[in-house]
Length: 435
Ligand code: GDP
Ligand code: IMO
Ligand code: MG
Image 1 (cartoon, rainbow, N blue to C red):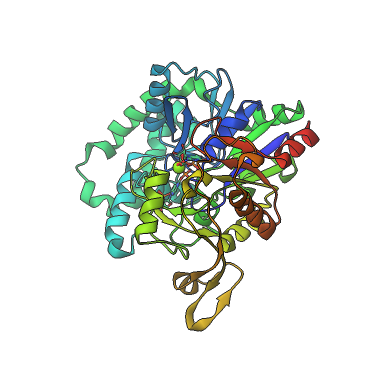
Image 2 (image 1 turned 60 degrees about the vertical axis):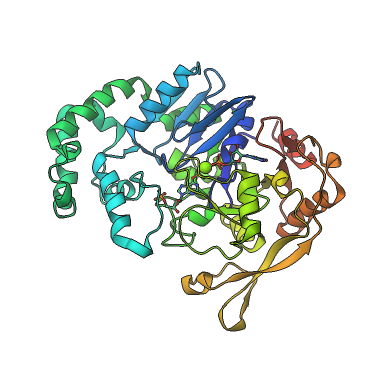
């Protein structure tokens, strides 16, 4: 599998970090290609829990080349503290490289993100308030500051000045805030630049070299397909493209460099923040899944909204990403719930039904799932290591998803631990074919 993209197939938090960590063992390079520290990727190794926001999930393998691609937005303060924390825990971070072209989240982006949300009031998106949207907006407006700009004081000052000018009005309430004073900012970010300089590199060339050597490159997505700024539930989305196509742009490779695309989906669905969610469970069952699955945000600690598995949304994700494999995580969380429901269609306004994901916002807001009931199981499945170890009904649940979507299930998660994963025959076949 020379080029393998890992993408979220729902609204994020599907377990991309865990899957990337597992695949990173065989990989030569792991690269993040979009998003920023709005992401929270959890890796559990024995008693140790690592929560990564910017650094790719391959970093726990000493010396592994872990790249932050040009498509990522980097908060230099967050990445330095993430580096410090990993080092404190004895992790070798020598393999980290950050694209010189990656854009930087500045203090005014954080202020604008929070201010924008506050102003939206009841209409707010529920962003992570990490400055992601305003930073990508500046990138598109060509007012962005990039990693390479941190290395030259004169350029840095000029660019900060140019970025601040059109925002004067918006930033008026913060006029006295020392964190956005031009001179103080230039000095502070120059110092951060000094610290990060050893990591700044031409990341796309590193990826090309690995691919030329027939090495394996894992493209680690953040967020999820339904949070995609083009294809997701706009405007309740993030400001980047979490779909697989963005791996090309955000890492600097061509479509043919990506051989496999694995979509990660929970055996149910969660969403953090506002926006439509056709299969949402608001009552006791939703609470039960939240408790059993520990569904509280890795980045903001917010309780995640929970709901039944949505096969309409997943089929949309299969198509948008060109998925070649599907990883179903957190199957263990559904133990004891009987029957289980999966949405195979939506019921929309005025009695309309939809078998495809509706593009119209007002329809989606009023849609709810039409469900097929499947039998549950009571047995503890956290020790299962092959499909045969699962109770018949759990196997049938996986087979139902596989048949409905027409995509092989490659991995099934039965617990947060590294070893709590079933690798299916399909995963082995794909790996052998690639080798
Ligand atoms: P990501 O953002 O896609 O990397 O996912 P998060 O790390 O935000 O959230 C996934 C959570 O589920 C993490 O706490 C993982 O440790 C946990 N997790 C991953 N796979 C499984 C699984 O199969 N079963 C259970 N119970 N937990 C899992
Ligand atoms: P990972 O990589 C889940 C959501 C926010 C909000 C919307 C916009 O851990 O799966 P933003 O701060 O990006 O402008 O917020 O997107 N969101 C996520 N939800 N997982 C994530 O990342 C997310 N990153 C952003 O909650 O609804
Ligand atoms: Mg997460």
